[in-house]
Length: 386
Image (cartoon, rainbow, N blue to C red; front, side, top):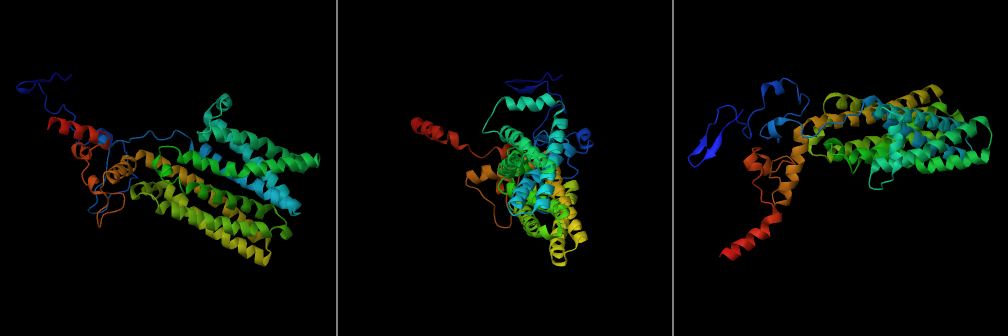
C-alpha cells in the first residue's frame, strides 16, 4: 500500500519503484503475453505513437470470425444474386434465374443461422426488432434483412414449384429492390465502429463489398447457368472482379500507414493476397469460358470468384481484429488529426499521418497542444489582468 504524501517540504513516504510514471516501460508480464506481435514496426527515423504502457486502447470485437465474416459473405452473395435473378427473368433466361433465386434463398438462410449462432440465443435477434433506429446501421440492417429474407425465399419457392407465378415475380422484384442494401449495409456497419482498420476505410469499403458481392453472384451464375445464358454473368464477373481489385487498392492507399498495417500482416494479409489472385484468375477465366464456351472453364471461374469474395470478407474482418489490438492504430490517427487542427502538419520527408507532434509520445509532450476551446477565455483573463 502506498502511504506517500505531499507536504510543504516535498514528497514524504515515497517508496522507490512503486510509482507508475508516465512513459515508463510496461511490465514484463504484459510483454510476455504476446501483445502486438503482428504490429507494424516503425521505419528508421520514424517514431511510433503508443498508449499508456503500450496496451490496446480498444476492446477488440468478440464476434466469431466463422459466423460473422461468413454472414457478411453470404449476405453479399444473396443480395447480388437477387439482382441477377430479376435480370435473368426479365431477359428470358429461366435456368440462370432459377439458380440465382435458389442461391439467394440458400445464402440468406445460412447467413441468418450464422448470425443467430453468434448471438447465442434466437430471442436476441428478435429483441433487435423491438425498435427502429435510423441512425444505427445495425438496426436498419436488421429490418432490411427481415424484409429481404421472406421475399427471397418466396421467389425461390414459387420458381421451383411452378406455383403462384405472379406472386413469385412480385417477390423476386422485392428481393431485387432490397438486394443492394443487403449486400452493402455490412460495410456501413463495420465502418461505423471505432475499430481503426474498419473506420478508416469508411469511404471505400461499401464499394469494395458491393463489387465483391457482384463477383460472387456472377460466379454462382457461371456455375448454374446454361451455355446460352451465361453471357451477361460473364461480363458481370469481369466487372465485379475488376471493381473488387480497384476498390481494395484504393481503400488501402487512402489509409494511414499505421492503420494499414492491420491489412499487411497475419491472416488478413494471406486472405487478401489470395483474394486478389482468385479475383484476377476468375475474371480471366470468365472471359476464356465465354470465348471457348467451355463449361469446365466457366465452373472454375465461378468457384474462383466465390472464393475471392469470401477471402475479401474474412480478410477485412481479421484486419479489424488486428488493428483493435494495436494501440498505435488508434492513437496515431487521432494525434495526427489533433496536430492538423492545431496548425501543425507533416514535415518534408516525414510519412503522412506522422506530424511533428508525434515525434515524442511522452505524456507531457503529447498534451502540450493548446486546446482551442479555452483560448478565448485565457485571452480575456489576460486582458482583464492587464
